[in-house]
Amino acid sequence: MATLSASHDDDLLLTRLQAPPDLREGSECLAYWRRRRRRLPWYRLAARREASRMVMTWERHVREALIYQRGVPMGARLDGAKLVAAVHLRRWMRRAGAVLAVTGTLIVLIPVVLFVDVLVHVF
Picture (cartoon, rainbow, N blue to C red):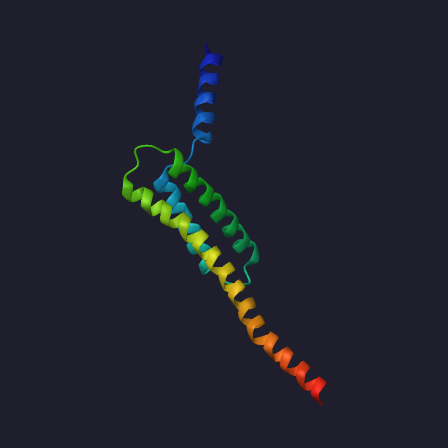
């Protein structure tokens, strides 16, 4: 009889561990790890790496909780969605900034190169 109870307890534990986390808990953890990563000095490389890994982990948990958790108030869902969307927006803005920088450089550089080429061939 003890074996049956232990097996049932193990099944319950596995089910709870595999379930997505509570959305509020996930949002709080994600916000904590983002703040920690932002506050760490640049020379604390290992701690910054750990914080970055934890941010990615908690982003995944919050996304899963947004999808699978039922009965969560709309305010909590919006907070979680804002936390996850902020990351994608920042990444997109960084990429767009890089594209704009390269484009701007080419817009300035190409006419200068052409002007120098014309000067070299004229004189």
